Amino acid sequence: MKIFSTNDVASSIRRAHQSFTHILVNRGYTTIKPVFFRSSLIGDLPVYQWAWWNKATYGQLDRWRANGGVLLDQYTFSDRAGLADVLVFVECPMTMERIVRSGQHVAEYSVLPRPHTWSVHEQCIDLRTPSVDRLKDLWSVCGGKRMTDDELADAVDIPKQHVQYMRSSLKPVEKWEIKPRLRPESAALIPAWEWIGAGRSADKKEVRMCGHKAAVKEMARLGHIRLQKIQSYPEIEPDWGRLDKCRAKAITDLASVRSLVESLPDHLQA
Image (cartoon, rainbow, N blue to C red; front, side, top):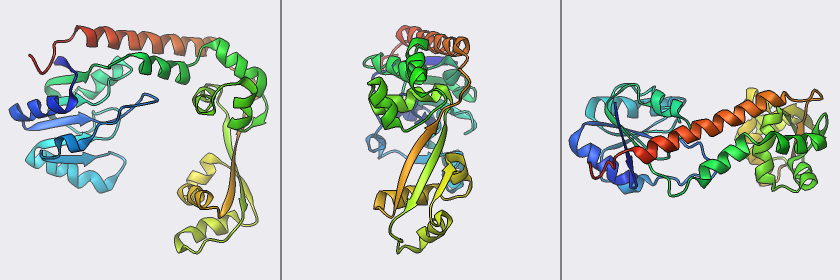
């Protein structure tokens, strides 16, 4: 399968649509600060929206298959939509696996956007797979403890939004401490309110499995409850060797993608 690069995703989608019937657009994002694609740029084309986890969008997938057009796939891997003529990514992937797997049912070619700078991808690696030295700094503060992200961020002098990504490598269990304040009037929120009762401490997974996650977050936003998220870190020290290998693999993967993208012909001039 051929692969091209582009500096203009919308124009590449248009060009593909001029020559082929079924254009698949990978609209998933994996970087920390993505540049979101505006579907209004191709609003005059027959555009369909699909996400494999949302059954309400399956009719969109069926219509795209029957009529052709442009299908915006919301997932990061685009191998579930079935056969397509052309695949266009709106964000340059971090790994070759995503490129190869997403394009396995594509008949003609794929198109990868050229990043204006690779620093966004490099920052993503630093936050999702931090260096072992950086992780050890975090561990020296949080290992075996219960801490909020604010407490850990203050202790290591790292922005909270960065800590929230980096601490995932340390495998904490997120606890939600929930205290009632003002009973909501909305009937949709009452089941979650009654589940909370006089107060509840639960794992994030438990809240999700009970079906109350969205309602709890909404009540916290509206001030009906006080919600505090606490990370419970394991007492056993992480496998630093494994974490170092994960980072090395991420760096190698990105280097392979960058080498590929920088060697590809321009789709709009081919």
